[in-house]
Amino acid sequence: MKYIFFGTPEFATIVLEKLINVGYIPEAVICNPDEPVGRKQILTPPPVKRLIANGKWPIEIFQPATKAELLAMSHELSTIKPDLAIIAAYGKILPKEILDIPVHGFINVHGSLLPYYRGASPIQYAILNGDKETGITIMKIDEEMDHGPVLANSKALIADSDTCESLSKKLADLGAKLLIKVIPDYISGKIKPIEQDHSKATYTKIIKKEDGKIDWSKSAGEIERMTRAF
Image 1 (tube, rainbow, N blue to C red):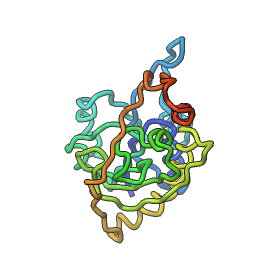
Image 2: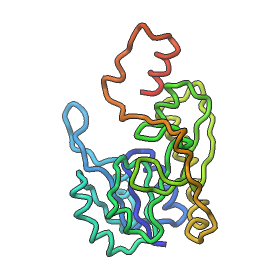
Image 3: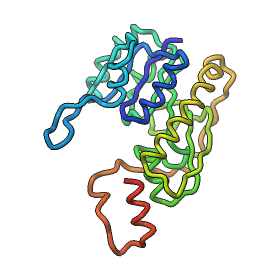
Image 4: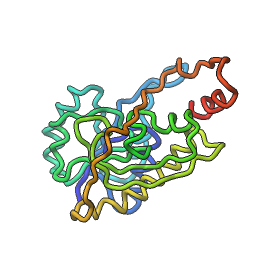
């Protein structure tokens, strides 16, 4: 099976590494550009790029910064003739021209039990809201954010000590294992996608630095959850 992988942060790296370890090696990886990090603003590659660059696999890496740059790659991606594309924490809405390239479309590894917590920060919001349970959803991608039909999901408990980092690792591991089971059944047509109940959808937003400012009028519990989420 030929596939392309879209993802950038550590969550995506965990998923991709587990796919590679069972023999699912992508033809190409698409991630965000290198960014300046730290006080010295040292240009640093994202985690997914570091994994591929340090590996032994002849995988091409693309790092489009804008939608226009992504669209400019469409011909090059089409020449790969991928059966499938997989997304894990890529963070961008993909245009139809890209979505139409793989034979079996795009599937996404999302860190919540959809339709709850669509958007960029489902893991942080689950902690912020004091949820005791969350999960992972494997879904088909369409042109709207986290809107496509569900292929599979799996629940996970949120420990009182979980931080965004620890819960992300837990869900990435769970998502990779579920994805590995789903891929062959999805490609063979054994899995029938199930439409989400869009009336129950809830949404998250991109976390910004100012979100971490403490409002001392909030309860100790709320502030403690902010500490773990951010």
